Structure formats: structure tokens, C-alpha cells
Length: 191
Image 1 (cartoon, rainbow, N blue to C red):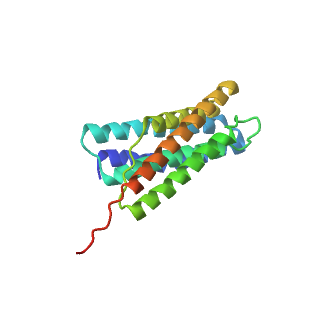
Image 2: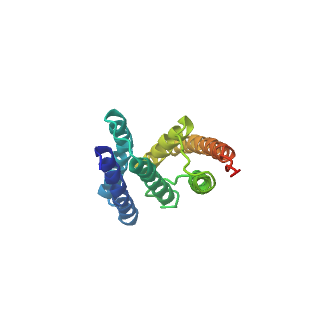
Image 3: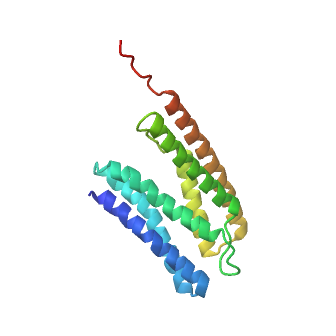
């Protein structure tokens, strides 16, 4: 259990706290819960960079970390986007449903592709792309922007950018998955 993995596990454990605080604010309108949700989300999002830095700097990269780190990101972002894409009246701005749909669609496609690659080829490795990292950052900004109740016009443009980068990253990952399946080694004949 490395320090980087401990940070990642702490991030995963903070996700339900974020959702509970956000839902509590939506239900009651008590501002303290909105601010707690913002703080928890921000700390969890910043923790993504921290655990990555610790893993690289102190040579703490592990298979468990490679699995848990993206899981922590997905849980945080998908739950935040889903909750904030629902209509919460005057309390919170609504993240466009097409952004949430694009994120969910890409993530389901990636999961199915990963299962298929692992089944057909063996262990496949997914390397993060710049477009995926930009998409993640823009998605995080959209969630925080909506919770802070800042200008909705800017939220729309941020959501357009997040959707575009999410879609492009999905296409890149899909292309990479197809390449991995095509590079499948041929079975050796027993002659």
C-alpha cells in the first residue's frame, strides 16, 4: 500500500461525501452544504494530480493505482455531472444533458472496448491522451462552475468544450483499441 494508493483510496471515499453534501443542499437549500460539496469536490479533484505526482516522483506506480486512479476520477465526475444535469430549480444551474450523455457514452464504450481487448488480445494498456486530460479538466470546471452558480453563458461554452474534447478522446481511445485488437498475435501452429 503506497502513499499514492492511499491518496487515491481517500479520494474514492470522499466521493459519497461530495454527493451527500450536494444532495443535502439541493433538498434543504442550506448554503453550508453547497460549500462543503464544493470543497470536497475540489480537494478530491486536486488529489488526482497529487497522487499522480507522488506515484511518479517516488516511483510508486502500481497496478492497483493504475486501476483505482481512473476509477476515482470517473466516480467523482460522473456522479457530479449526473446530479447537476438534473433540474434543481433556482438552487443550481443545470449542466447540459448532452455533456453528461457524451461522458457516459464514452465511458461505457471504453469499458466495453477494454473488456473486448482483454478477452481477445490479453492484457491491453490504455495510455492517457492529452485530449482525455483536457476533457477531464473541463468536466471538473463545469461541475465547480455550476456549484458556484457563476455565469450560465460561460457554463454553456465550457460544456461545449468539455463535450468536444470528451468525444475526440473517445474516438482516439476507440482507434487505439482497434489497433490493439488488430495487433493480436497469431496462434502458433504445432508442426
